[in-house]
Image (tube, rainbow, N blue to C red; front, side):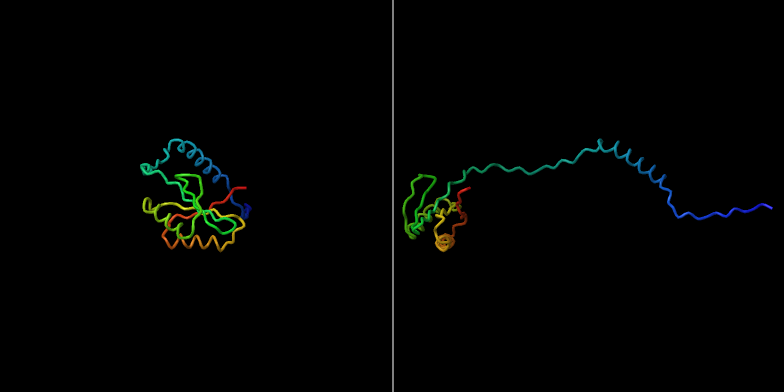
Length: 137
């Protein structure tokens, strides 16, 4: 009588066929990747503005809270002004250029309240571009 051999179940996975498939896929990708053309994006083009950006008006707040105004477009000399003269000068410049930028240069010892007052005046008179001037270290 022939003796029957019992088969035992293995709880292992044979990964050799999977490795073969992976290597075939790798070769296919390595061959086809250089053949694919990358897509090109056509970006819209714009013309340069014919109007050169204007130099900002510089409102200077000194340590004693007095105001001075410097028009960088015309001169480097600062002119001492009152709040009303400041408003009039800015309105006059805005009549020429509605997008007239204004920068505030305050002494580092000036109270924050004084800077806020000047910013409030500029905001009430519809100055759109207001910046703070700082000195780099």
